[in-house]
Structure formats: C-alpha cells, structure tokens
Image (cartoon, rainbow, N blue to C red):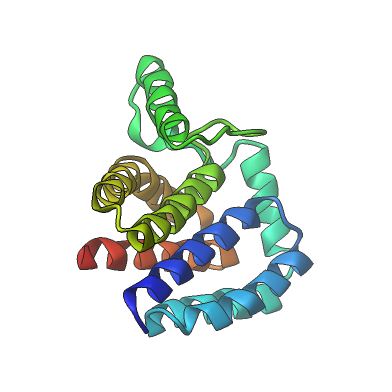
Length: 193
C-alpha cells in the first residue's frame, strides 16, 4: 500500500471513530464492520483492536449506550480542556486555541465545543485529506502547513484527550478499543512523517 492510501485509510478511520459518541449500539456494530475492513489497510494491531471492540460489543451490546450516557451526563469528559488544563482560565484558553485550528482551515464546529473529541477527530481527518489533495497539486508548503497543524493539534490536544478517555472508559467498552486504534494509527503517522 502506498502512503496516499494509508493516509486516506487513517482519515477514514478518524472520521468513522468520531461518530461513535452519538450512535446507538446497533449503529456502532455496523460501523465496526466497516472499520474492520478499513483496518486491514493499516497496522494489523489496529485490526486486532477493532475486532476486540466488536467482540466486546457482542458480549455486552448495551456498553455503547452506557458509555455515551456517561459522556452526555458528564461522568466522562470528551473535552481536551478537562485533560490538559489545571484551572478554569486555562480551560477557556484551550477551547480558544483549538477553535483557532478550525478557523485556520475554514471549518465551523456545530453542536459541540471545539475541544470535544468528535470534532477534533473530524478536523484531523480533514487535514489528512487536505494533505493528500495538496500533495497531488504539488503544493509542498501547503502539505507542510497541514502536517504541522495536524502534529500540533494531535500532540497538544487530541492525544491527551484520547489517553484520558481511554483511562476513564473502562476495559470492557468498545469505545476504548476503537480509540486505542485511532491513537495507534495517528502515532504511526507521526513516526513516518
């Protein structure tokens, strides 16, 4: 597989993973089926994580709904500010900082705060697709800017949020394994850039 295919596969994985926070168990089951095929384009360990997520969902179908309810009720935070900010002033600053990445790339966040994990994963997906587009056009400076923004957003905000969510979700949840796969895919991208 070439680099372009890998980048598109990771972008697709991120986009799909961003949806799990609003889906019912049956929808996540369907989406995991599509993600399993996608993961074959990536590291075999990601495929294993997605298979584990699928088996956890089969063992306990209500797990997805329970996790999403915990997130909606505030028992588990999906917000970057809660994992990297020590006080309220810093939390506001984090939301503003993350919001700047959306503005820079012409994206408006609707329905969630900018530091919610779902729109951040969607933005990373967009940056990867944008990178492929700019590469095909021969815009090396544009590619460089895209990747710099992706690296800063991932390292500074997305990765700490993923780590916090994974830590707080519990071992038996499909979300945990999906998010571990996302983190593994993004870490592999960082290692190869």
